[in-house]
Length: 283
Ligand SMILES: NC(=O)c1ccc[n+]([C@@H]2O[C@H](COP(=O)([O-])OP(=O)(O)OC[C@H]3O[C@@H](n4cnc5c(N)ncnc54)[C@H](O)[C@@H]3O)[C@@H](O)[C@H]2O)c1
Ligand SMILES: Nc1ncnc2c1ncn2[C@@H]1O[C@H](COP(=O)(O)OP(=O)(O)OP(=O)(O)O)[C@@H](O)[C@H]1O
Image (cartoon, rainbow, N blue to C red; front, side, top):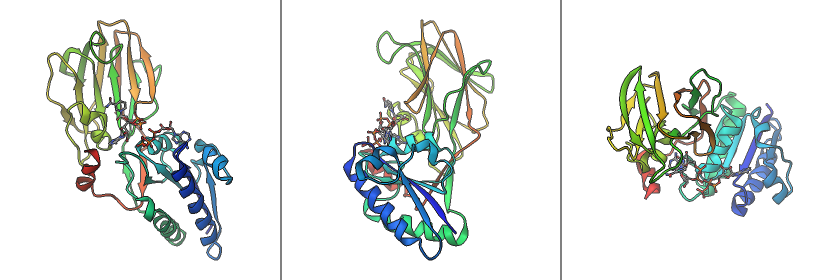
């Protein structure tokens, strides 16, 4: 069976680009008898190592996409390819979302592709994503793997707003605050953690709501993924809804944003890092 693989190296990271090149070469060599393994890399890497390349968002029809970099590169790949199976190789400063060490990358990926050729499936796990929509649904942010943030004009002094959070229609919190975030288990170790939210084990099917610098703060709230969450910003001239720190929408207060689980999850494949031991990466 032929297998199509995409490889994304962290932009500007020569080590990532070199590993992408050697992985591409090994994969193409390994797939001869059982079927072809067609490999493309992202355009920045293709230019650096002179390999067949395509835009990352055109890799969504591949059987597997390998992300080589840190969390941000994996988040970027997830934004671009959605539910296409992704394997993360950790070359970043933190690399919380990437389970495979660079030294193991070629063996892990070639074994994974060989198994896929036999079984037609990857062992992996789905990670829920979050979607932020305006009241009246006249806009929707790109799905977030980590969190949705809704905040006032800016972080810090003079940047707050009145932020009301409703849970299944009931008022959970209303306070002058910088904002509020809703995080997935995967995102509980990111912005949520730096705002004092709880860690959520990746096997827990839950979301967490954490206020940001609230004057009258409530404890962070863990909810079922099906909970109806709405966040209203008022008493400020502007505000923002932000998905994974990268995709943002300006708000015109008073404005209400609803946050729900997106239809399509992310599919991470390959060895699952041990969550508790990977917490050391956060030191
Ligand atoms: N704490 C803050 O003030 C702040 C501000 C912006 C973004 N962020 C986080 O960064 C994420 C976007 O990452 P990026 O790389 O595109 O932005 P970035 O370049 O600002 O990197 C943010 C840092 O967060 C780390 N990170 C990202 N996801 C993580 C996760 N799930 N667990 C642990 N650490 C994680 C990254 O490795 C990086 O060190 C956002 O989803 C948000 O969680 C935090
Ligand atoms: N191959 C690529 N093509 C286009 N953009 C890329 C590519 N790799 C990374 N990026 C951009 O860089 C951002 C992540 O860069 P960043 O420097 O934060 O890397 P990282 O993976 O988080 O590693 P680190 O942990 O070292 O910060 C992504 O959000 C994306 O916008």
